[in-house]
View 1 (cartoon, rainbow, N blue to C red):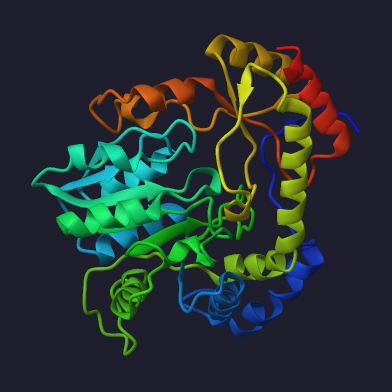
View 2: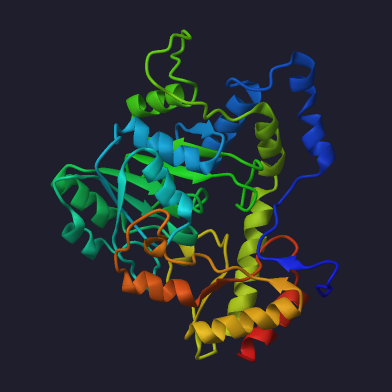
Length: 365
């Protein structure tokens, strides 16, 4: 099966259960009228995800950006500087800004694509309140090094784990590291609720505060005890999540198969490199490749689009160059990688024929 002008192949496509499975889960909400406010399907989804992740608690919310904002709020980070990476989606930065904090960028390790802990201490000032790492494409940050720095300077640690919900590190979920981890259930993720996300905090008090903050600051007795927001997940989104969760293992296995198919055909090319990661600590949710030059990337991208294949430049441009979110801070490594990285199609619709065809176009350079 080949892409055509009428049926293009995009970089991502949601993994979905059948519409009949989804509809069957909507019967109770339709009959009871319970569509939101921490309903039974949301509670069930939280329970099943905790079992899947092998964690004790989590808080489902309505999207991954809100998850980051709630993490900042729960840790009382409403001013000051947050050290973070410039190599991420803009939501990582905009969530910091919306909580009235200032993002301070630290450059990346060009092999792992994550924030480089060796550069963090030089960025710490008297205004620094926290470090926010991003597990890029599910590759775990150097959590031990980051925690050591945080402990030394009395800083909080947040992780943007939008890509990493199904990644383990040293025998436990990567989401259990740091003070709070935020993740996403957006349609492009391995597991999706169309829109959605979650916060994970090991500390019980922080966990309880996150629950209050997502529901206007209400406590269990419905009293408003602090300033919260509307971060609730609906029963409709939870139903889609429960339907999709049954197929998560199949989705993950297929993504790994896709990665291995591309890698087998492309790893000999001297103008191409791959993200450095531990295969046991990666969920293969994305398929990034790094070219030796932006010119070659643009040429390959153009040739793929002519074949109705639409890859995407994750993450381009580097966040430190976006005037809308930050004054320019030179980050030469992030800027360089951002110009040369391309994510190839990786989802349930990608077949052996597609992998062969896409790899052939890339090989021509």
